[in-house]
Image (cartoon, rainbow, N blue to C red; front, side):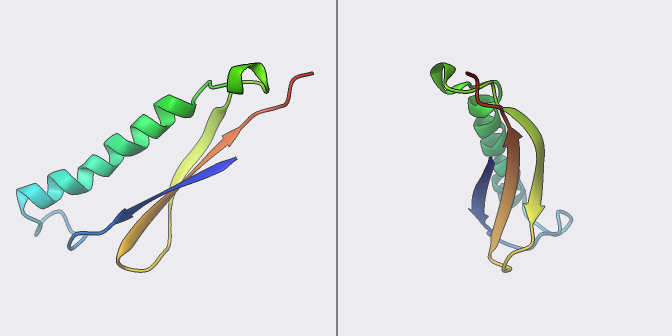
Length: 79
């Protein structure tokens, strides 16, 4: 299963030239990704399938004004 989480870019991607508030806002996306991971990692759909396990979480190439991360989880259906 792949979950995509998108964020709007608020300014330049270079940390060296970004003001402190912009850097904090940009870094907050990792807090959101962590919350999504905490919600899904080892979740088993109330016993409908084996627990989810994240394989990867990588940024996808998109237009300049959005940043998309694709988190891929694996599971198996239990009988």
